Amino acid sequence: MTVPVQSLHLADAREAEDLSAFLARLIHYDRAAAVRLQAGGADGPLSSLAVFGRPPSFEVLAVRAARLGEPVELDVTVSAGELLESLSSERFTVPAPVTGPPWTGVLPPRGGWRELPGLPPVAEMRAAVTAAIAEFRARDEQLPAQHRTRTERDRIGRDIWSRTVADTPLPLRAVHAAHSLGFLRPSVPVALLSTGAWLRLRTPFGSIAVRTNGLGGLSVIPTRTG
Image (cartoon, rainbow, N blue to C red; front, side, top):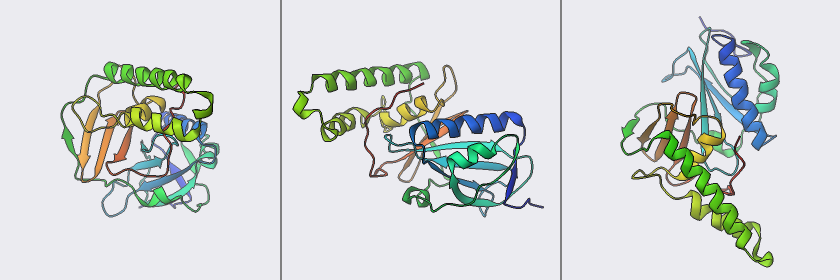
């Protein structure tokens, strides 16, 4: 038996805290952020909630899974801020649906993923992000005042964040997003997965999915981590 879609019951308080932290980080980058919530359905588990968000400036999708205390079938897009406000405990009310931005209709598939080799250690990836941020700032500071425009900064950002990680097809912007959202913590196990046109950087704290032909419409000026 499933619970009504108006309410959700997470497995425990820790799940609520972790989901709240994820939502807070999304809102830090975009106060008007929306998230798509999915649970159950024809090809998904009834006991797990998937929360999809799109932090600006990264051209990726961020995915946070949460264990449910009761089974439910749900597929709705809501305000990230309203959802965070309702998450005072593991049992909460789902906010009213909102008109989803275009990205909510283009989500990675749930199945068919295969692991790809070549991903470097977490410490090396975190160091690569730090070095890339420093490079962006140095190149930005070297721009003549008349060339310090959004267009020129986007060009520099695309040059840096489109670089691939080690011998993998994963763009560095996906690692930057994972680091900024608190997914890429020291010494955690990580994996690079692929299916069709999608790549996914998976960690125990969340995943970053990126389509190899791009999600479109975002700049890639680095945001501050932390």
